[in-house]
Length: 317
Ligand code: UT7
Image 1 (cartoon, protein in one colour):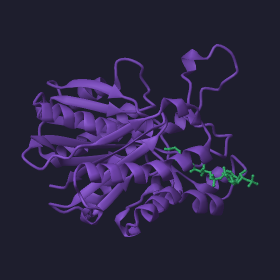
Image 2 (tube, rainbow, N blue to C red):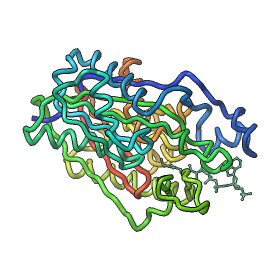
Image 3 (cartoon, rainbow, N blue to C red):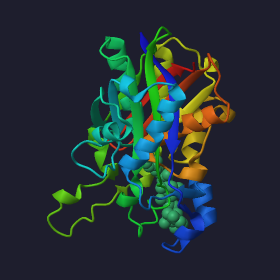
């Protein structure tokens, strides 16, 4: 038994901030942001929260899966930007959608979060403990963004994506994940509750160049590793669904893998970097656009703070 994605959903808040809006806040411009990142606009919450967005994505995924909320046995919510410390955001989603039989917890592996949550869900399914699992990535990064720092504020956006995994008889692939805490300083955000003086503003700080160099090296490596581990040839892969951090990162990964860039769908133009929500939002959009067909083999790859990175192979059903 392994987990099969049988439903997807996503949500992005209605308010949009484009690059010209950002140029009013910091010394930047539309051309620079488009060229260096690929981002054109991002969605920003007004009244929504990480939880309310997660609920919207989850409801859509459940409807698409054709299941009842009561059938869900486990909810894993990946986020680094929850509006709650406790109860966990997954429990709030459970309450809102009526998934009364689910066990719920949150996970934080930053931008690798969805991959890590998906792998955790799959491990539970393969162990035989649960058969129906809801995996959500939901982020309100605008709350953690320093709107005076042009090195970071141009990148991030808010949104949520969800998938329903059901146990089924299909080929099982082994995931590959890595973490390197010794490089954690490249991308940090200290909890506001831990700040005792004004030495830190509790917002995201990033060494962009370092994260960029890490991503373009480690993502192709981990994709090759997951392909090798599962005896899958790179030509067999229909799509590479990468965390949507930067268009240049995606292009560089495609080049290093010598794979056709048309196999690397991108939507950071519309959403910016939504951390753990980016991969499920992209999968949901591809489903809605009719780009996914039964039997296709897909690779997902995430990377980000930690540092952390990982990749998984799955087949569309
Ligand atoms: O989810 C994972 C999280 N993070 C990432 O994936 C981020 C990875 N890193 C990146 O995407 C890129 O490093 C950035 C987009 C953040 C920055 O691009 P870069 O090509 O690495 O630029 P840089 O920081 O090396 O800066 C190049 C120049 C500098 O000017 P000088 O020193 O050459 O005169 C910067 O001051 O661009 C300047 N610059 C900007 N100019 C206009 C930096 N940010 C901006 C800006 N607008 N927003």
